[in-house]
Length: 194
Image (tube, rainbow, N blue to C red; front, side, top):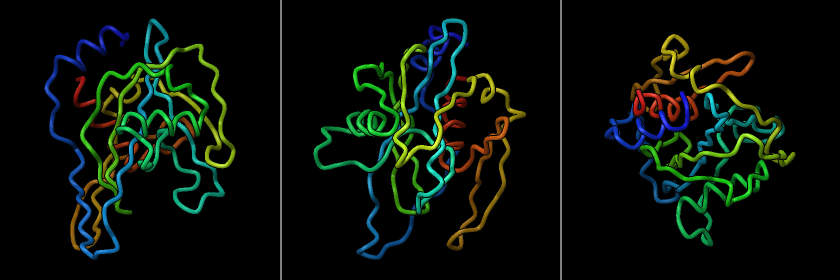
């Protein structure tokens, strides 16, 4: 799929309901939902698109070694969620803020750990030089978008959490295990442009 094909589908299709049905339900006062944003960067290789992903540093206490998008918690200085997503991408992988061509967003995703994550979809140039912040990111890699468009590459299992059942999605690619929030957000993207 090319950039123009993607844009046509992304902009002309109505945003379908999210494949993600989990909703954070811890009601205690000290467990408020925290706001976060991620950048879902698409690399334009002219003849095809790839999705840029990162592998979190293994030494991190939370989600160490997991595949994810650049992103994180909203800071008080962020003017909006786009600012959060692009700031975090700059901090984590040295993606210049002005290099992201923002095209829209997907449905928010709620995590078991109490975050509402807002995915911001953007194009980034293929020739951009990126550098992983070693404190947060172990690896930067890309996966052809067509891998996620192939439904044979999407696996789901039902799990029980806090007396509720919900699906966890998996999208393995080579030696990477793409799952959880990252896979659910990718599944929403695929459903939207299909």
